[in-house]
Image 1 (spheres, one colour):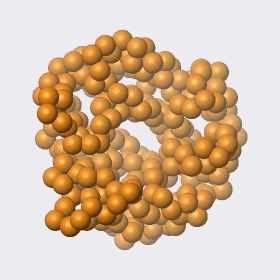
Image 2 (tube, one colour; image 1 turned 90 degrees about the vertical axis):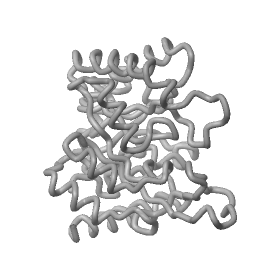
Image 3 (cartoon, helix red, strand yellow; image 1 turned 45 degrees about the vertical axis):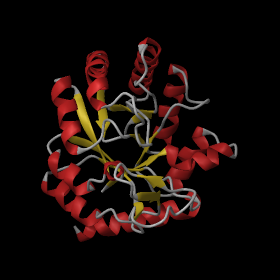
Image 4 (cartoon, one colour; image 1 turned 30 degrees about the vertical axis):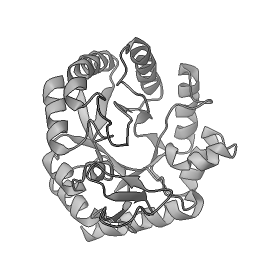
Length: 283
């Protein structure tokens, strides 16, 4: 099992003043094989990307992917496209094989009159094609995950991939995001096994929407149920089933830890990874 630390997992440490290189050191101490960085103040330029790659290499850590959060569900996408092309160049500079970015960030129920998947798809597809072609010329593959309330769900995601119609595109299996549209992680993984090139590990506590709202820290799903980020193995994601599917498909890519639970990452990321490694062996 090849493991990766998505550095967004340490966001609470960034907020306390840790640098990106400090977190590379922490990822190494926690036993990861690679790192998945994202744009921050000290990782913003091509020069920063080159220095990051050199530092990671000294620690014997690969760069599994470069990820960025951006919202393409806006009328004028020119600034976003320019930013994403810069990030693709950064991915190339740090030797990352994949560049991953979000599409439409919204995690709340769509309100009356808001743009939906159907209305957003044509313009989004045009942008993604442009980015895939740009990345292909630079030896980078653009990868996308089941994410948000619009571009999520197995059927919608299949339509998205079919509409983009590019060879230089891959799938990130995010094991938690699919639950926001009340589908199961194993449904998504089973549907796209032949196209998955990267995996985001994640786990959620789940509560029925027939109960009262649990309070702060919980999200509401498309069908009114509730989710909360948690330690891997403490929630409802069936890791052993998913690993069995990926092993059967011959998946040999990285399993990247995207930890966002309220429990401190210094203590609970190692516990999370110990759990998933055990589930991987059971599979």
